[in-house]
Image (cartoon, rainbow, N blue to C red):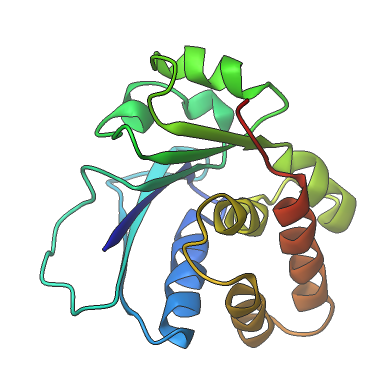
Length: 185
């Protein structure tokens, strides 16, 4: 089972991203869970969503405490909550202009602990949408970094979920992010 945690802010499409990832996994015949965790948050407040993807039925029904894959839509959220529960094998994908070493330092991670990938998702989103809507960019980057689902599965789900120009722009964003994301080292 692959456990996924997405960190962002209310209004950034974190919940939509978790659902799109889950739907892409369903297209591949996998079992999924996808759910948000929030209190009385408002637009702009920190927000986290979870997904689980497995070849077998999923019997756990709790938050993701030891994620295999983490996506961070807002780099200002780097800190304890993102670091919490990371494993040596965890993959962390962050929307930032900073190098992976700066993310590692912000998270207080020892060298070699977890794998850090970065991309400037804001730039990609601004080019396509004129706004920093980074949820689908982060998904494209997460797919490249982890292989959690096939790129085509994600693109197909986006085409189903959105229509017309919005679908086309999101497809371009995902493809650009898939190519732009870079690993540490």
